Length: 546
Picture (spheres, rainbow, N blue to C red):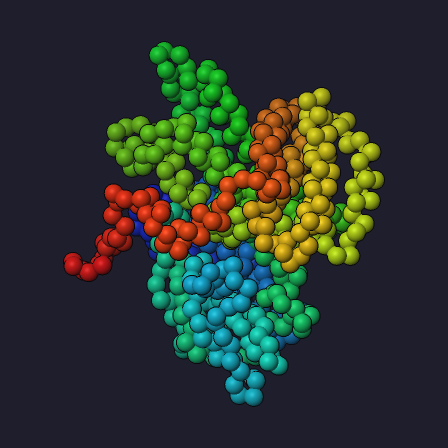
């Protein structure tokens, strides 16, 4: 990525909180704002996996720039074009892409992204030929620089509110950028709070779902396109950061000694470094498994579940890697690159990327909510009414021996363990549904999240072992060790997760304690004694104001 290295000083971007002037135009001219769009709309026409590789490379230099590319790919107008049927809306989006627009998606509102409805309203006028959109959106990636944004809004259709999506021109009267957001990381990434005050949108710029009775905001096809896009927006930067942490770990360990003994000869350091190597291998395996089938439809593989959960899994692994690397580098990790340069040591920018990594567990959906939604939409729908045949399927699979031909003995054992855990999970989910029929089932959020995390660990183990087996067939045996390290740690994590998934027959009364605190119960007032809880003024607040 010669453009980035010549045009972007990532440390300066972090300090100035702005991308370099002219960078977006240069990226546009070279097609980097239209990575997956076809050449006939000025795109590069890249495959899903090659798009992932480009965003990963960009993130290894500047995460804010990578996020601009990721937003364009994940929720930009080109994503919708690839799923829209021919017609007026298709022609409109096609022309705007030919115009070279920057785009984004305006969905999240101040009330929170987890609400099913939106407070933004679409009111029909002109006999239904036009809509007036009114509302506020926050945390909108590319918001300050976008030419077109898709806006979610509630529309009254025959007395029933339905969520709909509209293409909105940011130059239209009534549209404004209220303020630019500044986060603890990804500084320089253009993100904003947006206001729509009676913005007029023609009916032909509303997405009409295939099923008029659907309660989702976009069609299933578009939903999966956006889900795949989250891998570009989150997993690609996560893998880039993890790879950098791996290299910085080697850099640091190889130049340090403790009492004359090389740091790398210490047992705990060896555990930390090898764990990071295995974690990088795991994210790579998940990305390949989730994206390559999208580029090879003739394989007939359905990886929708994997694409849904890989964002959360990869963000968690990346954070684990970044935090472990911070522990390893200690004070030098916490120190800024500028400070290191001043005192003449390698200016590894771990502090900056550490802040950027934390964003990945929030952007695109906070991790614990994604795990809850995955359990609700993917796992437990499988055990709901009308799916009573799953017990028979589990029983049938129980006698099948996993294919361990291309795995060494220890990894063959890991694969058998993963198969047994899969059956255990199925049995536990069946019992959970039987004990807690819907809709009350979904009130047990903590256990549902634990079940989802269990599924994530089993999935990642399976994909890691599959990649190790494939590499073995290609004559590469080093992956067997990486798979063993990852699976050994995964088995430890699973033991703890199963305890969280157990029936709540006894244990702490979280609800009573939480309710008492939230209601202002004086019995817990001592928890805040000795601290100042007033919100301090910000730097740009006038003296005397709060």
